[in-house]
Image (cartoon, rainbow, N blue to C red; front, side):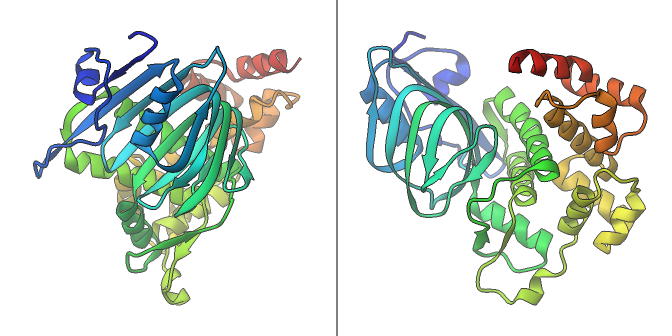
Length: 344
């Protein structure tokens, strides 16, 4: 594409180019399929960038400004149930965003951003509040995930033991540690499938992916039902299992321990994890431990790899190194050395 091109979803799916944008959420109404589309915008023109943003967000008073080196790139992939967006911009974007229609989570990759008065940390997912909020983004790279609000409410109800309905989330919550690792585990799994395929896809599978994304969000950010009796939230089931794993991530636990904490049968627990996370409880725990280890190694602060392995509950260093390389394509020592070189 040229510096001032936008692909329509159909053209993006087939690799063709165009000079006009199109509706990235257009879908087939077939009962069994939806059409996953991709919309790409690359431009040096602030007006074109503004149109692209208005295409993906409801923004009042939107301003897009930049100097002679202004560059804007945005890729939007998904359906009305689940969408991933990656944006980079060398200028400034400001306005009032209305995030009422979907659950919107953003993570800043570089640059500076303020959303609803909260300065966003780099590399941490932040949930947009429902309704309107002022935003300002400066020379940034960011990723955004949008999840159908009804699906999030349904997954929360199934996990929490209450009737589906509006949710409240802990304001300005920034996940850390095991909940953050659980979030990134979900993002890696969902993004690989969404970004890998456009065109006609199974509606049932798209709903499953949205449910997996919802589960990752609900694990990372504390939440509760609005206007429902508190006692209805006590039968958490799968949510209890996830919380037990995250609270005891560095300890020796078994699948029977997790099932007992969740007041579920082992078979029921296995089935629930496979349905929501696409894996077993112990594989989920293993992936959380590996992601936590990577987070620590990337700081460049640990003295030894063995210290990190023990800190996340892995006692066999040889198995840790092999599993880490299988997961991330490099040895843990290589991650640590690279982080130290970058810092110093």
